[in-house]
Image: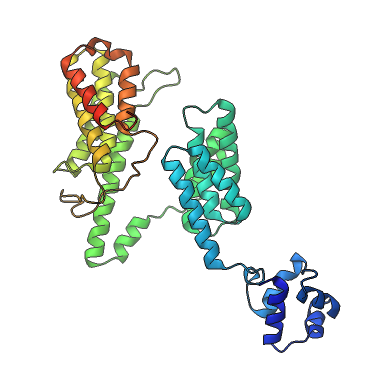
Length: 368
């Protein structure tokens, strides 16, 4: 139905004449007649007045079905995420850009676009000029979300992205101000107080799992830090202790070795340890930690989140985090590439154990 037909229908339902509507709007009855005959249309400034008068939304006047609009937005976002998960970050970016031309006020689309732009910027084939352009565009999108969006979930995602993207475009102080403006409250603590019974127990377990994973990941990150001159922040022995401590966090949480999603972090911690020992030409420790790395890599690349559940006491009964298997490359492929490119492993190339580990990774490499 055209906007003229909609106005005519709403006017008649309220027993209102064209003259009465014209008088309310401060225009001529002929102008209203022209609308209803679809010869002209109301000025955009008149839409809120008409919507208020007829007690409908401007979308209703324009013939926009809100439910259909939301369905279309969700479908476009789904298509973009499918492209992203397959490794086509550029396609995901372009899909969202085009979708926003059609739905320019969709903050969900803006949020997804910012995510895709950030991921595209950090792809290996991205030039410095492209990196700066993608981060700048993402910053503009985030600014709009933070200024106008009232959806707290989308706002939260935008804030997280801002803290990563703003520093890349020279807005470090803006990122700091944004963080310090966030109220210092804990959603988890409030929910623990609010929930009761089994729901409270499940929530407490979730907090423990998230906390342990965060502590382990941050410890791995800490051990990997470098000074301004590019040298490691810690000496080799300290880094070994830190990586082993991170691994112990996970082993404490998952006493039945049901690592699932967190196996990826374990694999990278073990790879760091193998790197240290490889640089020392310590074949025994290098092969041990490399074997552990391969074990965790295979767990991560092959677990089925649709069938498996945790058996360890704290996460017991929960299903593991789902991941899209149609990624551009999996962890097995990434580990193979790292081992192939690292000259520190040259002294082990002819070692039978080393060769066997390489073959195990090849079996789950999704690029072969």
